[in-house]
Length: 195
Image (cartoon, rainbow, N blue to C red; front, side, top):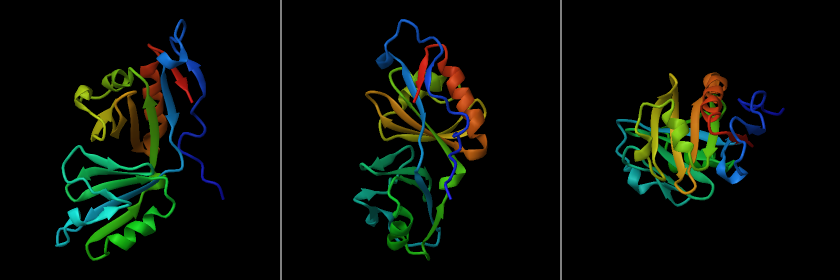
């Protein structure tokens, strides 16, 4: 059985909006990120285990708000006190987490199929986010993450790169289509490439 991605039927490829007299390098690129394993890790209040002593593939769990740590395959996003999202292309990430996070101290939940992920990259990506987010997007730097809303839809923004700007934006799967339309509508003014 093959899984259908949340945006499979609506994501369009090509040039859209005000792209005339611009090179492809000047345009924002919007794509759906597929085949990600997304696992929520929550440490129980009764747990005495120090999270700073646990690492996954050489990555420490971030201990402060707005932070994420990463390597080539995996990103760990701070999602709240004692709460993290592990985003990975590694197929064994769920079992790897179960091996390093004892079940009497952590709840580990695979939420991969409950999220739609849109990637926005290119100079001007922040401007797209500003059109629908109440937060100060200029404050966000590489390896920051923040939960906010975009046009009334709850999202999680993960800043992957600063130069060129690259954001992975997570929404609930059920709002994925609406969120995608809001993002692409916001990008029409400057033009974008659907890839």
